Length: 239
Image 1 (tube, rainbow, N blue to C red):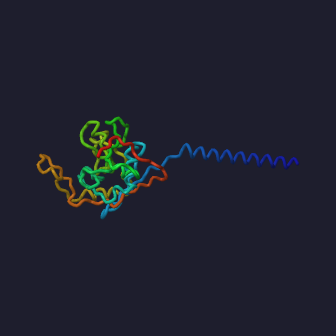
Image 2 (cartoon, helix red, strand yellow; image 1 turned 135 degrees about the vertical axis):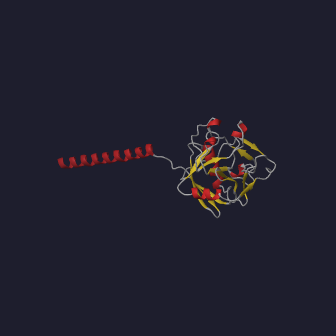
């Protein structure tokens, strides 16, 4: 009986130790867990794939907007409509004209057929976004100028940097960066033939940035690793 009691106590002790171990491991995993950032895959016809890591901790509205539009197939069939070799390549205009953008219906089923804008997430607009505009940074395009309307005018257009440009830091919303594979594709796109954009022929400093043949985006899809990023908060709606 004495030995049986000892065995029981040993078994109980082992069970307690195992339980403590299981709880400890679970707690450790919980406090050290880090959500995987979303990864976007931009497929460009005739060029290849660009992989981009998105940073929701820096620009949550821009990231949720981009994911909703991409996975909703808004970008499929659009093109890079503005290309400046030693600066950036820009896409996301619905009709490839640099003007048309997305509508609320592109973000959610049953949404209004109205255009919208989102908050500009950058320091000049009161948001502590520390992403720098270096080679490979992806950012939200917006209206020019230094007014609240211009700051909060982003919709669906985005650009990818081909070179570092510090003048954009704190003035535009960076929300991700090209990773591992894809920068060579960005540079390849930046090499396409361009001409003066429509309506700028009479300008004193016309911008040579309109592709003769727009590189077409076959698709953009974002792997969210099980996380739901929802849709952005709309700031302005207009027909």
